[in-house]
Length: 163
Image (tube, rainbow, N blue to C red):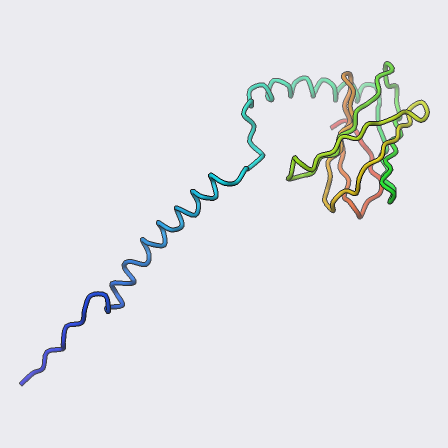
């Protein structure tokens, strides 16, 4: 007489759980992805991309103007948090340049200290302690624009030039 194996309940079969596990993990992964997309802010996409695209041409003109004037600036940050900027070249007008320190990934950490003139072509400002990162630097007036980068805390000085 041959014995037939006893039938096990479906929920006790390992192959059933294997077949259920893959689609279930895909559904759970989809919900996690949806939750992340809804609750986090990417901060890198702008709503007015068309307007930003139009301003690129104006920025390029200011950088060309800086290059024609032979402008260059040396930016120094001392441990006390004082920034000094030495501008070289034929800067037109009496406009006080604006300085912007931009964090590479988090726009809320950007900082725009108010520069004060200490001598012709020499400016100073005070800044709080900056986090360790490669900061992008922009020095500009309505007529010209200089850019550069500085790695905090490894570097204490950088040269800003037209791009």
